[in-house]
Image (cartoon, rainbow, N blue to C red; front, side):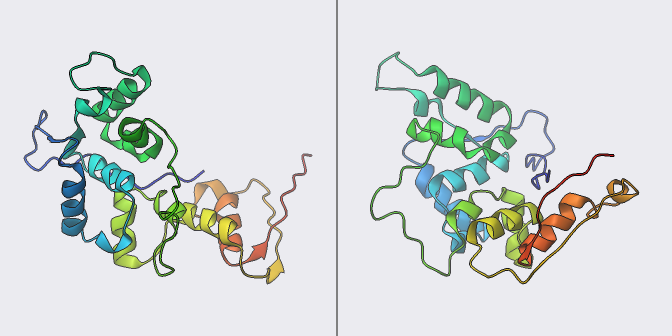
Length: 206
């Protein structure tokens, strides 16, 4: 199980109770565009929900309660959306789960796929892979052009456009594998799959 690369929320003045900028229904798109430009991530062309997720992870922004208000001047609100907003506000890293961001914005955890918005230019990163990246991982990819291993594994399993170049077997005798970072059975399987090896999964319990 691979953990996403994350960092503590941004706190420029070292304050314990720093005031965060609020994103509302009139400024969230323009602010997201500015954020991507300043972060150097514009070329990824992420969906708005992804961009907002990255913004929330930075710890500098929060979503306004106006997003969970059903109608102007009406006290009627949706409990699921309110709880999602509470979680996103209390823990910026909760926005790694884009389902929470979409629930607050669009009242649905899944992205709608209207005609005209499905296509992404072939030189752009696959949308499904892009949505897996945290803000820190996106910045790291910008520097190194390398996806995190956990995402490369997902990407390889999704695309599988290449023929297998061979088969491999991994034997774990419960020696020192877990004690060396990046040397566990899971790491080895991921590397082989990414390089187009077939790795049948089997277990033998003595």
